[in-house]
Length: 327
Ligand code: CP
Ligand code: NVA
Image 1 (cartoon, rainbow, N blue to C red):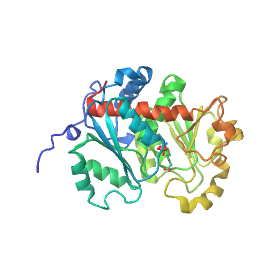
Image 2: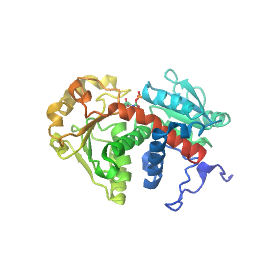
Image 3: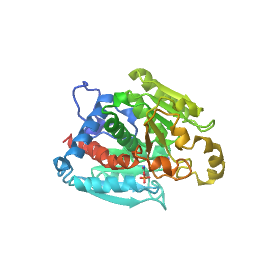
């Protein structure tokens, strides 16, 4: 058996003071240490404050975006973000044929690594991104799977940090479907010490495996993680986060879901249960009038477009760390 020499296969159990993220995959925030995520958020803030500082940070780097599902924010923020840092991104539409159909995922990964420096993939099956990462010598970034959406959670942590000065003041609640965005937020908050309340209808809780993983990370980091079916659990929270009730690939369940989720709609009456002045968050796309009303998403306290902007800064910071070793 050959000994892997690429940086992504190195031992990453380094002292907390050493930040070397070269070659790392971003499949889930559960795989990352608190100081590593904090370093990415620091870099993201620096780039946001001074974009010129990153203007050539990805010079000569090529990225391929393999997307099985639709996207606005993820596609544009990666493509434009990489260009703003001097790199090149190529979009590959996999809506019609899933990754692994035309040739094996192994061969796919081993071809792509000869041309580009990073693979960014949005897939249905989470196993597709883990298999790409297993075989590719270059980093693989999860741009959303049915299970997780770590780039979204990175941007959300950045947004919470901006809103509350630092993460220690944030007390978010996620209300709605226990889906990929909820999972990513649970894992990211658990690692970063952000107390999170997750409120879902019965039967739509986050997946058992993710709940176990998030509880283990929360225990390790001394983070409070509360799961409830009761909208009253939103009391005391200073950020209210929701997502669509019908994720990509779930159109067949739409009718059933809409009825069950109605009491969990984020409207002014629900916001009134949270702390006065609580901010509103949504990964977008939103179904206005369904999971959130116009009065909430258009309010001064809504930070949804900050979250969207922060996708680009957070992802650029991530790419700069894993491809260039930092700014
Ligand atoms: N939030 C998010 O990932 O948006 P897109 O699906 O438009 O990329
Ligand atoms: N939960 C949503 C998120 C979209 C960004 C979906 O998977 O469709």
